[in-house]
Structure formats: C-alpha cells, structure tokens
Length: 353
Image 1 (spheres, rainbow, N blue to C red):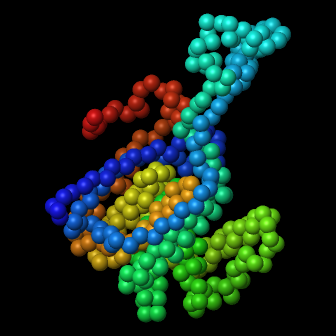
Image 2 (image 1 turned 120 degrees about the horizontal axis):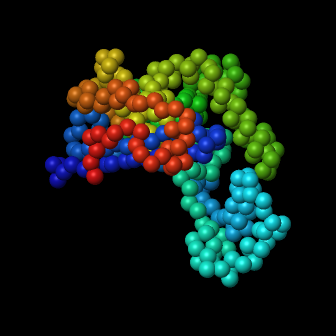
Image 3 (image 1 turned 45 degrees about the vertical axis):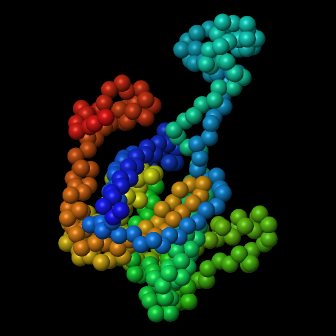
C-alpha cells in the first residue's frame, strides 16, 4: 500500500560525569521523521552496508556499591560536617546492620547496592578507533553491495565519496567526522593518482605485517595507524574534501552537542538548511550517510535529494531555534546535571503529553 505513512520518533540524552573528558560533548534532543513512498526530501535506495564487532568501547554498566562503602562514606561526610565520631564506629555499624530494623532498607537489604547511572564508562581514544574501523568496514560492505546491484562500477564511475555531495555521519561531537573519516577517505582513494600525491607528502601507510606479532604488536600498529589518520586529516586534499562535503553537517552539532540516536539526523538537517540558506542546488544530488553505535556497529547508505527538498528544508528553522536558547550559568548547569533543581529554567511552551 503506497499510501501508508510511517513516523520515526527519536530522543536521547547524552550525559557525562562532571569533570570527565566527555562532559564538553554533552547534548540532548529529539525529533521525528515521516517515512513514505515518493518522499519530498530524500529517497533512500535499498542498499545498506553494515559492520559489527564485539567491543566495550562505551557502556553503562550496573554499578555495585558495598555496604561498607556506604557506611564509610556517610561517616566521612559526618566528620566533614564537624561531628566527633567514636573510634571503630564503622565496624560497630557493620556488625549491627543485620540485627537492625534498617536491614531491609534499600541501602542495606543486600551486601551490595546495585545502581544504574545515566553517565557511561568509556575510553575515548579506543572508542574513536572503533568508530573509524566500523564505519570503514560498513563502507566497504556498502561498496561491494553497490557493485553487485549495478549501482557502482569502479572501472567507469567516480569513487563513491566523490559522488556524494554531502557526507552525513553520527557526530558525538562536532568535529568527529573530519577526525574519523580519513579511514574511508584513504580506502576509497587507494591506487588512484591522488593517493600517490598524499603518500609522497606524508609517507606510506603503516602495514600490520611490519609490526611484531602478538598484543604488543597490535597496540604498536594501532598507535601508528591513529597517527597516520591524523596526518591524512592535515593534508590539503582531505581539508578540501571536508570543506566541500562535511563542514555544513557539523555546524548545528557544534552548538548542540551529542544526541546519540539523533545526531545523524541533526547533521542532515544542518547540511540541508545551510544549503537552502546559501541557495545551493541540491536537487538530484546523492549524499552518503554513516551511522554508528558503540559496541560496535555501523551502517552506511545513501540518499538522493528530491526536487521538493527546499520546501521541506525551509521549514526546519533549526538555527533560529538554536539561537532562541537561554544561556545559564555554571551553578544552574550543575544543579540540572545533579538533578537537584526542582523547577524548569524556562516556562514550558508548546509542549504536549
């Protein structure tokens, strides 16, 4: 039934511990997309590149806090408040918990208190590496499927990343795309004259076989590969590539931060509204889209901009809505982060339940 219309709703909250390396990337937001036959904005052909690998680069484990830790922390707080505590009070409390009427209290009903936190455990450098590898392998998978489907002929067509007028990626922070995309950029240009020029400038890429066997060799190779990605990102060829195909996608992210689920859609809106505002003719253009989720999995696909795209993009009002935000000071921010602020910073408007 080609008259059916679906709606995809997404919302997420990217929250990190205060003082952590991920704090500056925080963001939150939500949105909704209509899915239909003959869309006015973007057609997505049925070719999907996917990649998965089992890693723990980012996760939200259930924390366990022992009874002893709870008791000691409360007593330390009491001491900081000026209370004179008896010697060995902690030991006495521990001995009496199971005899006390507090033994069934949530804090003490088990030997450990299980706690779920919204903030993750993550390794930034490792997560970036997983991102690069996953998106690269998803791109390789997409390229293979595009060739099988007759969409792409490497002997006759321009390389895919040069066919894509815009490249929309998951942005956990604004400049993730230009830092993580060198792997795909490199893979799509191997054996082309442009890659010979790049290698003459920065040297040949590291090869795993040139490093020692074993875990130590793996680590040494990965470190060298990380460095080589950074070198690619500083070449004039890659900088021009980013300026032409990626820069517009990261404008909104630099003002909003991470949205996890919604970040790829924010990047899409950022690019298309920027193109609309700059009167770019995007009708019929192909764009590449690269999604990523920690754990790790990636998906690469493409879209074709439709003739009525301006009618839709003109109604985004993305940047004007961002400009309408209200600044807050550090104390309000920390109160919101800790959940200690009991009222909204601004009066709710236009909401529904």
